[in-house]
Length: 168
Image (tube, rainbow, N blue to C red; front, side):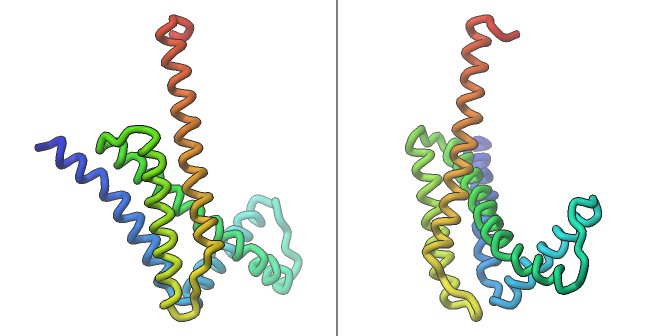
């Protein structure tokens, strides 16, 4: 019984992340742009605070903010889908789904969410769905799976070395 509850609870982060992604997409164009603008402003201010960047005028600041908004939005897309994919992968692992099906299932789930999310944006004022964004979201999911694969490879090498007495 406890084991089944844990299996069910492990899906909560997947569900919460999916809801968060959908709620970001439900923001109208003005709200979405405002959020990425605030992030750009904060980033520029942080760079100024550590003396990495010096902004001469408000006009220069506005140009920097405008140039940063697109990469910030796309970086956010990749990050949120990477997180979603990691949570999905962990949930599938907990449910006992074996490799490589676990990888494919996590990726497919992310692609399906990205696709439905872009479709949803067609109905949000000031937003539009875009195949390019599905591709960007998919890159985030693939990046997460590559990190998981790399971590597993390192873990297996260490385990093998321990078993052979090469590492304490």
